[in-house]
Length: 122
Image (cartoon, rainbow, N blue to C red; front, side, top):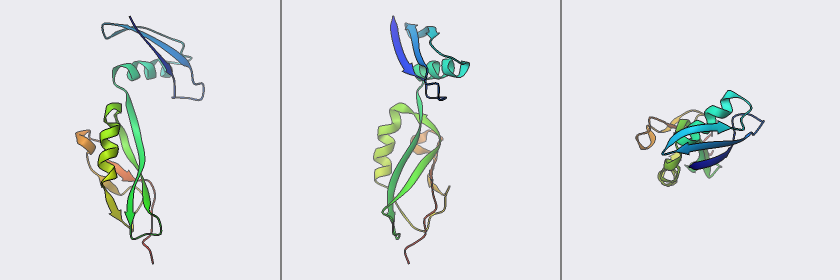
């Protein structure tokens, strides 16, 4: 039997959830206060997803980096590859919040967008 313990991050209750599975099939979920917690644990076991937030290099500005965020969730196992790709990217100011930085990140269907507007140096 596979037993996984999760702390739910959906709401401030932070429930300690225990998921039991056999041969990859979920047989029991306990410890959640609401249905959202149960769904969180099931999704974490089957296909964990994350929103990606980081910074990329920024040129032509008083700032050295630009905060960026994914416009959806990507598989958790692609976080490292995504960060490696974004580390190589540089953009020039001016940048407007929600500008498209990377389209279809690693064929996930998720885009990386600017998280804030930045004026050019001047």
